[in-house]
Image (cartoon, rainbow, N blue to C red; front, side):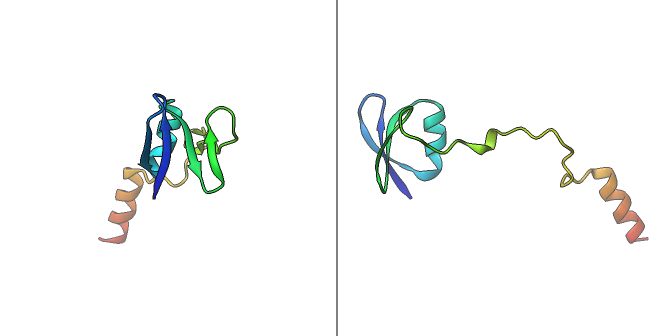
Amino acid sequence: MLIRIIRNNNQHDYVMDFMLDSLIDSKKIIKFKRSTGWVTIGIDPIRTNTHHSSFNGTDRRTVHSSTFVHHYLSSNP
């Protein structure tokens, strides 16, 4: 989906929706348009990027190669 933005040099543009977070993080835009109207970066509330959250626990989804190989070899003699 295309989103209307205003760049730091007041140039109006359209960007793909997946680009919005990085443009906000890099401070390359001053506004973007929602269905409810224009949002001013630093003034209006915006969703924070949750991709940067840190997790200090053990990642149980990670498959270690040694575990995988051991399981494979014991299942396929």
